[in-house]
Length: 215
Length: 408
Image 1 (tube, chains in turn cyan, orange):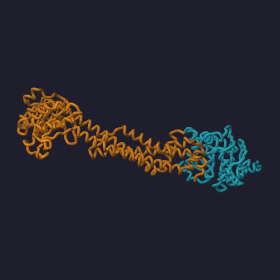
Image 2: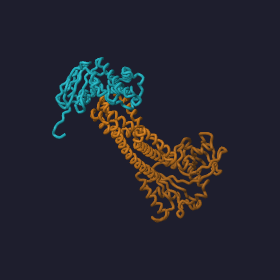
Image 3: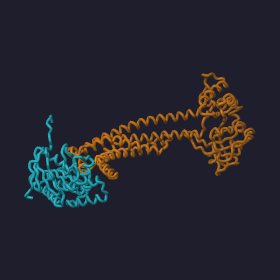
Image 4: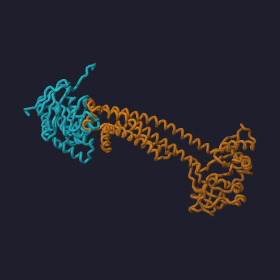
């Protein structure tokens, strides 16, 4: 407000490599959500550049951004963000619908994805018939159904008890070991330590960026 | 994203709010059913008028005797027949716009043939009657000059009479007895069908002279006749001729311009015009109702779609995060409002058909279901859906994914 421009992100210089598992930490207002939105191609920076794979994302229009999100990026949200009217399978099919895969192929992929998160027998359940942990697994299945290169997890355990949270982290860990890059946003040290690299942010700046030796 | 996927997603969300979807389409339902009813009233009236012209002939005036003192009340056979063949000749002479006049005497009487009895209207007239009344012959022929002049006992019968008296389809040369007088059948008329008030085919036609001599000598003494049908050369002259006939007749009957005439002139075109006019007024009324309710219905759809977009903001954000383009979101909401309006259209068509059926059964109005009106209703309702659904859909498509995801 006023004459002072508030910079959500200030002078960030960050590169994340293929196959990394990066945890971004910071209190609210630290800019981690904004960073996450830019990494996830939901937003473009007002100045500066962001390159994702071979694309200079800063120059892309909304259609191109949507295409990138659809093909290369999977989102896992704190509140799962499943569509309440659709059952587990239909929720997982959603991104495949937008990528124009045919009916047979996308049902196949959705069931495979649900199987890989251990929900083979919950395919036709609606979100309100599933527990929090199951819902989060559906949303992971949705994120991986289109075989993305990058998964962005925004406080994926925030709405879950610690035991279920650990199960979710295990799934993310497995996905990382299969070569999928993972960027995790959290404010819990226990969760952040799953990352091989931990970035701490404050006031829109990177405070600390170090390898997690314990991992 | 294919159209079937879009329809699938849309019906999912419509079904989760089925009552709301139907209530929303109420305006469309009323609008579309009005459109259908309006069109079929209009085309029904048009067809009816065409049929009437087909039946009674066009450009005809009918002049009928009327008791000058007691309108419409029969004062006995002698008092009521004020028209004469002299009137007819005079009219022909004075008014060049008249192409032909068919005189008519009539009585309702028992016809016997083949051991069967049948009550029918017997008309005595000339050959002009067939041309003017658009009568066609199914079988046989009209009168010959000699038969007309000599008062031969020959008759031409209508379809209803033939069916009730004879087993055969060709009653030519058979003998029928009218008031115990034997007549030879020389012709059978094509069926015209009934009107609301009379069966036109329930008729026997004999030469005027024969009728006057043998059947209605007492009822129509001298050269009295019951009525005459005047055929005018062109429809433009119809109303002017009607006035002229009135003037000439008043002069002949020595009745002042504002005196009570002893005849009545019926202009069939006038009746048809009135019929057409009343259905036109009805159509305008319905068109207004249709127009207003379609617009109100459209606004209803827009309203509910705006609510839906707001309710589903977060969902839209999720769809965008998994890769929905603006176009996908736009189409998704557009299809949804299109489906609401099409459902409304379908229900409206069903309702309209019900109304058409009910009205034509109950009021005996001629209604004609025009298939174009169903096509038109679909076009109407889908355009309403698209036009009024566009703004909400665009609003949804233009949401910023981050704001939408954060919306609670």
